[in-house]
Length: 288
Image: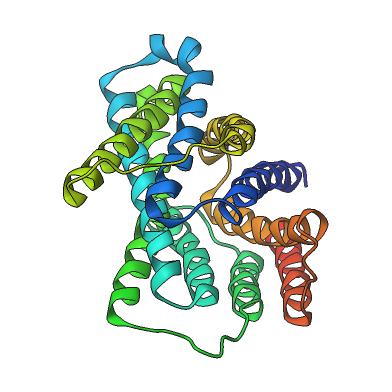
């Protein structure tokens, strides 16, 4: 029970970061360049808060795994936005949530973690809750480009958790502050490189508007992201992946829906309410 409560706490942290990021993304960000800039601000804040404690924990191991996760984070954000822009939003969100199957299955088959019957039922219910909450779209634009983007989104997102699990099996796992610092330091550098390449491609300097609200919400979002990443990595080492990954993803969907209702005045549809109820039932099965 305490393990599930801890996962609830992680889900609240993750949902808080999503809510802060969405507040700016919904109203002010136009185009991929501005989204990369805003994400870069969040990555910068996360890197800076771990600079004092992480700089002395940099090793070849923490650098390698941190850089891989950092670059993958940029790739995930980029392809997620492209998927949203080139296809049905509801299906993009649903398939992205299915990415949790990658580290979950890997935990069972590669790391030999036992998967109980109740956990299997819970995973099936979580997947069902994802499908139920999908809103029907009148003009669903499913194209070959969207399929490529969403496949890359799912693979990258699921692989990041798997790579973090691999990192926790190494001797450098005790130097986790260095790992987190290198993750977001490399993400900042990668974001800057992408913006520069965009300028060269367009043969002009891309004019980006960095507003006060970007910093106002980017600061707490970066702090929240850094703390979440630290605790999430520690949790991967301590909690079986067959429990952690599906339960956390299911809870993030439920809590994010509640945040949208409370802070963005969004009314939950009957399908979303049903999806949340199925998700809660799934969490109960996962915790048995």
